[in-house]
Image (cartoon, rainbow, N blue to C red; front, side):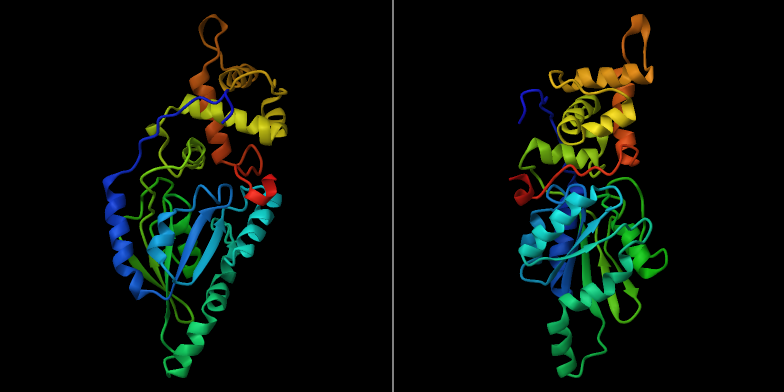
Length: 293
């Protein structure tokens, strides 16, 4: 990691996550396949490594959600990356419903062998059962409501809104099992933890917001310097650290306190909020390994 980055202490694994994992494990045998929603801006960091263990050999579909906020060129690279691994991919924006209509067809494509086997047994009318998994606040409930065409799941912008399981019937013989968002006990890097915090998968109050914003400024400078120039009206100095870049942005915004000092706390909140709201443009925080070579 760049020496300008500041180390962050992230503590976040609440007790209900363990209970949720147990519930998912117990219900896995009831379903025909597993769909995992991930944030298209951070497809690596928002994939829970525990899901591979929980899903076992169940057929899988990976849903890249929030494509409206992600860099379309980077999303295309992720799509090819997963397809090379033999993973079926569906791209969606659950808020507007883009791509959601293709979900039933995508499920049936992945389960075509299962469907043929059921029909051969005379069970062609049995609904397909699909478990929907994902980390907190990845848009899972909003996605399910769009697929169902009604308010079938509780949606919220706070991590951990969906607490228990719920079955939702979809038209044309498709039953979805909604589950609580689950995280995992230990991040494999600080960057993963920061990515989850930046996209609101973990609550901002579990870490230092100013440090998170300062490190985010460094990422923006490296990956999308034009976003800083366009939104905050200055060219990021390559020699400055993240806190200094935050100061520059705050000064441009006029966030001054006594004796002309910049209100770093306010600028940090604005930066993170404007990223959440898409005001910095379509920004992906991760590229697939092949795209980084």
